[in-house]
Image 1 (tube, rainbow, N blue to C red):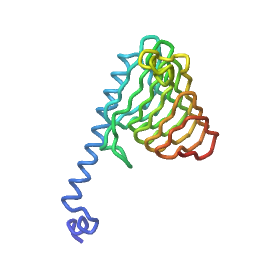
Image 2: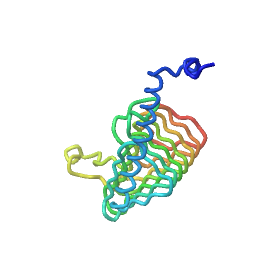
Image 3: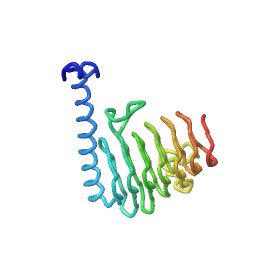
Image 4: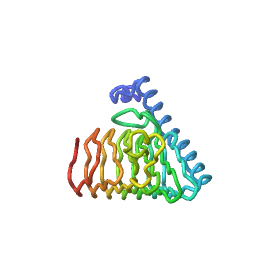
Length: 208
């Protein structure tokens, strides 16, 4: 059997070969460049990163002086539609602290896709191997006091901030929003598009 016939039987047409090669170049090249950029940025900004951290596409790191951001070993960030699976990415991954004492901690092996975590004055902690599907958001603050209404635009309401904890192996579906003061138990699954306003027990499924 000729080599050409074997190639045809396996569906390796010129178009398929080019398509596969393009995918590999985009994925491997994007990961190499994204990881290099992340590690350089983390070093310059004082963000601690463990071994094997990788990124595909840009990752926004914004650390306020006196705050801390820690990225555990083996964490991965996806900020590019080329690498995202089920959905496009609305914006790159972003980790941001807004004030002294604020803290963001990612446990080993966390996977974030287009996720944004913002700790203003307390903390956001993810356990080991937490998965955040595309376009999830986590915050420890409302960023404005609820009242009186005429003071909302000027009163930061810092006294209402509260930490967020997400346990080991939890999985948040696409477009979830986790608000201040929430604890999500280990192994829990949060359905796509959910707004989490109160605690979720371990090993359960919550949506809505």
